[in-house]
View 1 (spheres, rainbow, N blue to C red):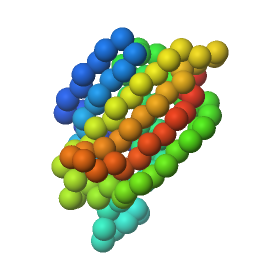
View 2: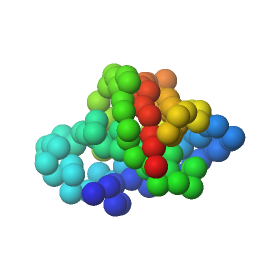
View 3: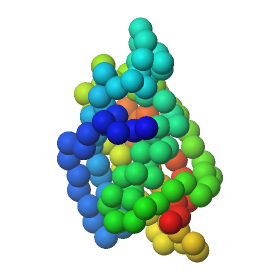
View 4: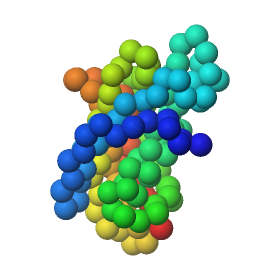
Length: 119
């Protein structure tokens, strides 16, 4: 579903964290329904992207196991926001990874979440 939804434009990876900058494809079909005259990145897609980006970095196929805290602070308009950064921090936890993510750009916070990802 998220194929061609975004592209990675920069990434910095350390032992237990990653900062990944992405650009959204404003022409993706998701935005035709969400919403045609003013595209907005769906919150569910942001949560899924944390799983996908973490999977890429860790080299494992991860999925959302639980969401302890998810806050959407600002709406992302992909036609107005050039890129956003996913600052992801993880620790190994029983059965997966306890993951924190801050989604932001240029002093604007769009979302914050604490989720558990598992294989």
